[in-house]
Image (tube, rainbow, N blue to C red; front, top):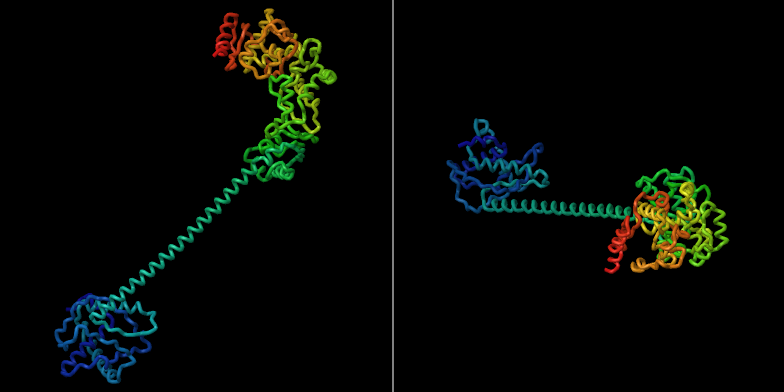
Length: 552
């Protein structure tokens, strides 16, 4: 039966089938031995035809081929059909092949349909066509005739296995290539991460280092000139060149990031221990038209300090980061100068309004200049002396009081009285409200003919004010002390100030609170001030906030 799907096949395959049937018919009719296939030669293709290709056997499951007409001689199942090579064919085979070609041509012309063959044969022929397409690249050309033998199956299996092995090798190579490419990419990524991270770390340290002071221990200032119209970049270059900062570029970007602007020209005294923010702030404030001697350090005079405390403060360089940094001044020189009559006369002449009511030396005053040195921070230079330092403090006091000289006169007060009362207010109160209430209480007592009754003046007379004392010593003072500073027995403001008051205390004395208090006492542990209108209330407060806490 002819399968419809097998009606299309190549001319070469059909020709081979017809030849084999004709050979078998001729052998049966002649009842002679069928000639050995080796005696026959396949017709060689013409030069114009495509050369025959080597066909690699494939494993194909064939259906049994039935021959209803021909009776083949018995053959061994394992018998293999030998390969035929064109170069070994004989002349007899050539003649027989030519005859067969003629017969085949006539058979094809007389037949309308192709001869019968099975589906398995069609599959075999299709496989051969596919195999011919895979072997075009081979230089040597051989014809392999397919037979359903064990060797063919075996060779097909081997071919399949070899292909699988080749595919596995190819896959392994591809995997190796992929792994190698992955490793290369991973190495590149790691290198990029290291480069980026290293660059970021270096940049961070570079900026961090540039922001820090050039030398935190070097407070020696230099006079730096900043020309008019200088940009932040140019200023940074000048400061770096003068060894004030580490890096001018960092200064440029730092000031832009922090929104520092409007730098002013002039001469500035800058030191390597200054931070970029400090330098930028000074540049915004403005410099001087002419160079000013650079400062070597600073002297800090806190509010409420006595002259003996100030004498110790001038020996300490508060502008240095070094522990126990000293100035070129001594405590003894300071105390000698503030008591020198010639120096005092010079100051009285230089600042007449400030010293208009200065007590005389024979008035029982302890130190004439006590309270007249204004508490603040002062710079000193290489040319500074003890006299110049003290004069700077007196000049600052005069500057602060200048706006209030007229007010003091209008209130029928003197500068010495204002400073004396302000010195007591400074020690008795901790905030502006308390200062004004304490000042108002002092005025109420004086207006009532009472003494001020301050413990501070007695401690000052005993030389204990400003020194470290116990709560018991502060509370149990000698109210019968024979001294003009004993404000329990002497009325008025006292002979003079007992410390250097702040401007806030001076303002409180000039503008006191209007109250009805006559007494006050401070908690010995918290410093909070409690006011009273009567002596009974005062005694209760003293017992509660002083005596009870001292005994506990």
